[in-house]
Image: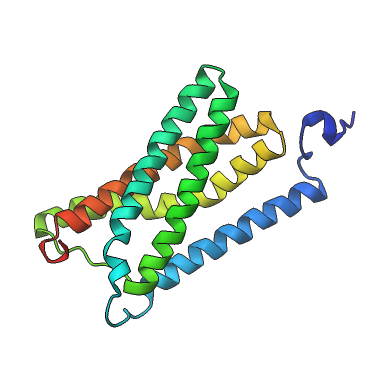
Length: 191
């Protein structure tokens, strides 16, 4: 039996519309990851403009605020407070998008930032940074797909993918704050 997509509240898996959405999410994710990689691996620019000095703190604040919104959104949906859940999660998306814009602006200006903290702490820093970077790349399509499912009112699909995307998003936002702290507060030359 074929069920019309309207009855499912979204697209039917395998349809042209579904494949088009997957392609858009994957292309958008690839572009974001590619731009970030280019900014971090290109030769470092010369002098840093004054705006680059406050952007790391702003980025960490945006990551921290995203974490709070994600937790409040999760709590709201657990309590079946759908409107509050929607508000918290959309706020988290806006904060993450603002973070991404600010992060790109910062690294466009300064390139990659080296860890200059104590040598013994470098392994801890890399132990936080590597999963953060890898999960950040995974997070982009997960969050986009989760958001699209909700916007298309495919709540069954939204719930299914949100169970995967929320933990990844939380880990990325928390480790983002930890990376900032280790990089800018444990590195004497960057304080």
